[in-house]
Image (cartoon, rainbow, N blue to C red; front, top):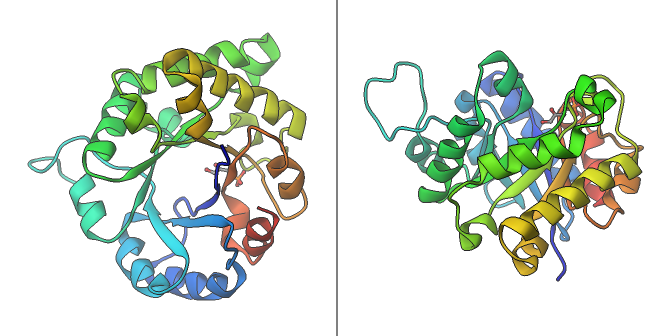
Length: 249
Ligand code: 13P
């Protein structure tokens, strides 16, 4: 079964609302590829103006995080309902920066994935090993562990809606991309793990992105690999290069 390519930009903590609108307007004419789902994942405060800016285009909007409760005394947090009502359709969950700087555990992330699904948001669930784990030879064991914990208790029908992003931590923001063979090896292992948890048809339906220094020159080779169905792009998503990445998809 053919999986539709999905290229998402993760803007991280960049762009004020007015800068975000300007960037969205700059990128929209560059990302018109009918074969690719294009998503801008933006800071919470930028969601409403960016949703407005992309209206009538092929671009969808995502959040970069969510909180697990529906409402209440959780000062500073943002709920899935708030994200959904703002017009975003996707949400990044479990980015390595949140795992590391905000101590987000797999059990907590599992709750976030369930909450996103319950509220009709599409989770972009991130996983990936550190340099130390790669050098120790436990990459695939570790990524399988993350996937199994983060998807615990999620049905096959719900799992099919999820996008998984394999992002080796050592490749994020470092300019060191995983080789296409390294990325394919882990994305294939993730799909095998999904087939074990669910079944082959479910595993074949789930899209797996690569993320980590993806740019205009390496995107085509990465996206040509059989188990790489898209990209989660950081730095290059803030530049016209993002259009070239979308064109490669
Ligand atoms: P870079 O593309 O800047 O390496 O970031 C990747 C990333 O973390 C996307 O979520």
